Amino acid sequence: MLGAGTRILVGITGGIAAYKSVILIRELQKRGVEVRAIATPSTSHFIGLETLRAITRHEVPSEVFQGSEAGSSSWTRHIHWAEWADMFVIAPCTANTLAKLANGFSDNMLTSTALASRCPLLVCPTMDGDMLDNPSTQRNLTKLRESGVSILPPDSGYLASGLVGPGRLPETAVIIQKIEEILSEVPSGASRSHSGASPSTPSTSHRTGYLAGKHVLVTAGPTREPIDAVRFISNPSTGKMGIAMARAAQLAGAEVTLLLGPVDSQEPVGFNVIRFTTAADLFNKAKSLYKQADIIIKTAAVADFRPANPSLHKTPKTEASLTIQLEPTQDVLAWLSQHRLESQVLIGFAMQTSDDLEPARKKLTQKNLDAILVNQLLEGKSGFATDTNVLTLLTRTGKERQFNGYKEEIAQQILSEIFQPL
Ligand code: CTP
Image (cartoon, rainbow, N blue to C red; front, side, top):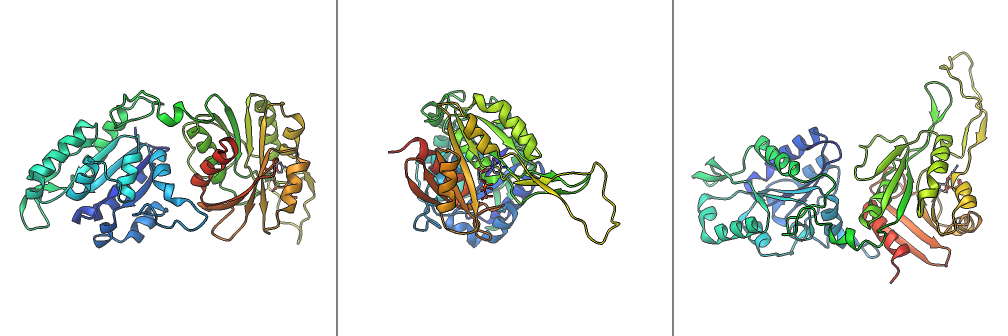
């Protein structure tokens, strides 16, 4: 069923109906669905990509190599986006893209992602009636159907060419109904496939995942330390990096428990999520869970101090100034490092405003960690609440490597660097 936690990739191609994709995305979002969009290069002749960027609040890539700066590896984005999605809907789909999909082309972001994806694929062809009737197009539609792709036939009516006939993009409600129908057929928890494998066949990456059989405990998000009944001390963490680490561990085959602080975003699906509020709450939950974990990743932005005497009531504004006495919180990571099991791997994070790696090296040694990820706070690019991050990995064995890119992508690169060295 559609709802919070469902992730849909909307592919848009260069046809007159491209503008209708905005309505489709909005309608999906109204149902709580998380949507990302991919446009083919000719889409921008029909619709502004800025519109799509604004409504999805995400980049809208067209090319595989788009934005791959030196040091970043966003050229693997098509793989990560394909893994991210529960379903891929291409609406509208031109005859050209249809032909590429039917023949396994991977010459842009949309076709490459389609080729890499294992989730159900719904294609909504729209084109002039004669193009649709052409034997080549019909052959391509048959090929796609035979490989398990769902096709939503176009509606008949007035076409942009001035002709009347089949070729129009069906109404948004009809597309959504089709999406619901397809998702309801997918067994929950099963890996989905449109490439001929049975829907219950575990995906290749899960079967061969380098963290298969491991239990990973991830902490993410801020803590809230109450001052009184309505006020608290906190920080702007949104938990995105921790959720990305949890997702990356899950994609590598691990069983994941996510200890998640008070964040507004939708509850991530696919792993066991346990919520915490204060540093003390996190400490108690981490203490009761840590023994089950093979790997612990401490991404949470934990308050170092808390009000010593929080009031149970709202403090009235009676004084011109107010002094709040603070006391240190328990350092959860330090405690875990003292009590860690012999085989356990412990990974910490360190938020910094400077690029001096020395303090993090000290934390790595003092807290007896296997690795630490130094998170540089760069306005709008890295740190709290951003989609991208700049992280430097320092390991106990002396490895040092910088990662720069989307949080979901670098999370996968980091785990692979630590657990799958070449
Ligand atoms: N951490 C923790 N418990 C705390 C504070 C921090 O478990 N009470 C963890 C964080 O989750 C992170 C690591 O410690 O993995 C480093 O956090 P950071 O705030 O960067 O450093 P601190 O150790 O608190 O040191 P400082 O604030 O002096 O840099």
